[in-house]
Length: 286
Image (cartoon, rainbow, N blue to C red; front, side):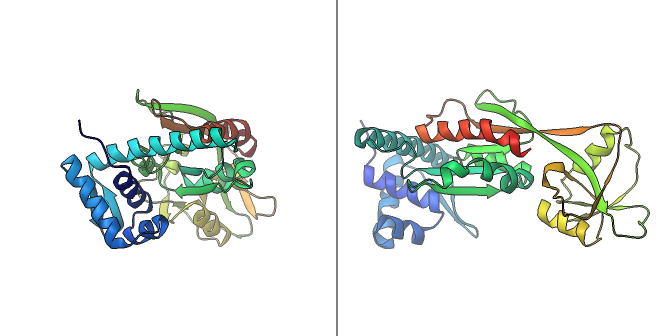
C-alpha cells in the first residue's frame, strides 16, 4: 500500500500555501534545491503533476487541490492534538484564512475577529479581499478556510451561515452645486450589478445612468468624495464626518452577508472559534 512521505507532503503543502518555492524554502529552513526535490518526489509518488508554475506564482492542478485539502486537514488535526497534549490555547500557532468582498472585509470581518487576532498566541491572519465571483473558487481550491459572500450557496458541499445583512444606500457629494444628467455611478467593474439591482428593487429598471469603474469600495467612496460620481454603497461604511447626501427611497434594499465553508471538512478548534466570533460580532458592525 502506497503511503505519503511526511516531509514531501509538508514541502508540497508549504509551496501551495506560499505560492512560492523561495518563501516555502525559507519557512521550512531548507534549500530551494532540497524543496524542489521533495516536491518532485511526491509528484512521482502520486503519478501526476500537482503544481503549476505561472505568472502569478505557483498554482494547483485539480489533483493538487485534492492533496492540498487533505494536507490542510492533517495540519489542522495535528495542531489540535498538539495543543491538547501541551495544554495550550486552541488558537496557539494557528492560521486564519478568510476571503470576503471588499465592503465587509475591513469594516466587518476583521474587527469581528479582534479578540482572536490580538491574542498572545502567535495567531497568523491571512485576509483576501476579492470580487464576489472570485470567492467560491478560492474556497474550493483550499486557499482559504472560509469565504464571506452575498448569498447562500446552493451546493450540498457548502455550509452557509447568514451573519446579517448590509443596507445599501444611494450617496452623492452634498457639496456639489449641481448634478450631471444622466448621473454617473461608480461600480467595481463591468460585472458589478449592484447599481442595477438597487434601482430594479425600487421599480426603476429603466432609470438611465452612466458608469465608471474603481478597484474596490474604498475607491468608490473616494470617488464620490471627490465629486467623480454617485454610488450605491453599504450604509455601515458611511462615517458621520463624510460629506455625503443620502438620496431617499421608499424601498429598503438589503444584501445578505453569508459565511461559507466546506461542509464535511474537518474543523479545528480555532476554526470553530472563528465561526463563533463572526456569528456573535459581525451583526454589530453591519
